[in-house]
Image 1 (cartoon, rainbow, N blue to C red):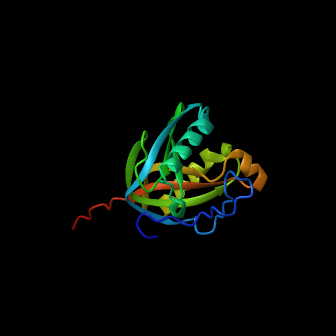
Image 2 (spheres, helix red, strand yellow):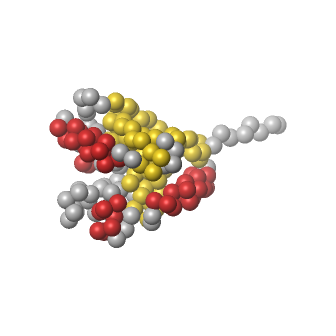
Image 3 (spheres, rainbow, N blue to C red):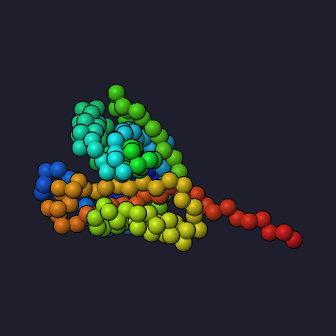
Length: 178
């Protein structure tokens, strides 16, 4: 992938009028490279990792992104992570600043892996992702998930695809003594 480029997320295949149907082709086991890639950062509240206000926060954030004409349909992704069991952080890729929102720029290397199943499988997906990263001689710095569809759309489509997005770094090489 080119720097700041993402696999295709076809926005036109959207029979629900909510979340487009996710096609996993091109997303599994990809290397992504970000250099000052611009995101809106939003936070949600959780209880034991169960989101409480995700719909409200996502609706407002997407609305503000659209109002600012900052949506990045060609490189769409929302990366989410839980720094604690009581809150989550969400990073919405955008093309420009969105007034009234915290903006962040991410730089680094990332590996992706596509999973399918219920959200309760996330702990297993985290283990699989860590193993996948390690098999590629990398170390996992941060783990994000891209929830490709909301729960209602996942039921309609019959699949719940989630993309693991791991920020990675090379494993330091041990110095060899002569």
